[in-house]
Image (cartoon, rainbow, N blue to C red; front, top):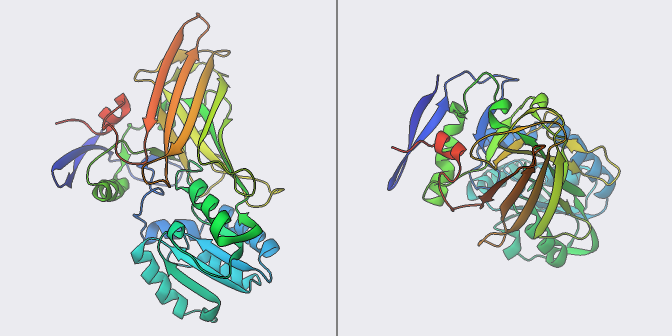
Length: 367
């Protein structure tokens, strides 16, 4: 059973296909990707501050790098989490930056309640438009997306390294990569409809309100079954925050099909290292607030067999806001019968065509 509900935006009434099934631990669920947009609420902040896989890695990096240094915390959130943790780890002081005004005011109230509020300076705004002195020795950034660069980490941290940090300063995390594997969306949501979780509706509403009109949001799949993957994961984008950090990338990867099935897109997920020799956080296989992102390529699923190859080109370039990336995917599926099946996706940070692929026409039915 699938329900149709509606989102009202000035000038638009958007129909949304909703899964009426109960949300519960272990049940896959479809949501919009939300981290790219200024719509954070207490629930989203709580999922981050209670993320043990993430937090223990960031804390270990701060314990190693923070003592007697100046910390810059980008995207500090309402809880000032890494500014506080940096000071507790022995930093001399911290500058905490938050761009969302509501979160900034809550952070300001929380700052007053700290034992040593004078060691943290809280600033409102985009870090790319701020200046302060002295510069930071260590930057810790909570702006990594489920698609690693989706929240603007490359542009923001490249700017921070140039203007806000001392030469040779270190960034936490050290590295983040995006992996991809061939899938069919309905296999990621077994025994349930291809539809948004009902709890996701307020976030769709907030994203469309922020933009002023509907567009094809990236599709976040929570707790997908690992046996839905039809290929091994392969790297499609990499961000080396303490190395050659690129704001524009293009990479071609060959995904070898390992079992029979149907393919209509790729599932992407994050691997993240806070220190170079860390065990990476793997968002596909570990319980974390980062989830997997499904990106459609073909309007109709294509049958595949072991030995078939999906040749995927994954490109990222800055959007018109010069911070958040737009993504473009081109795919050629080479099957054993000698045929080539071509697919593509343009996934801008905002705007673009609405209902561009069959999956979006199903999720947002016209009329």
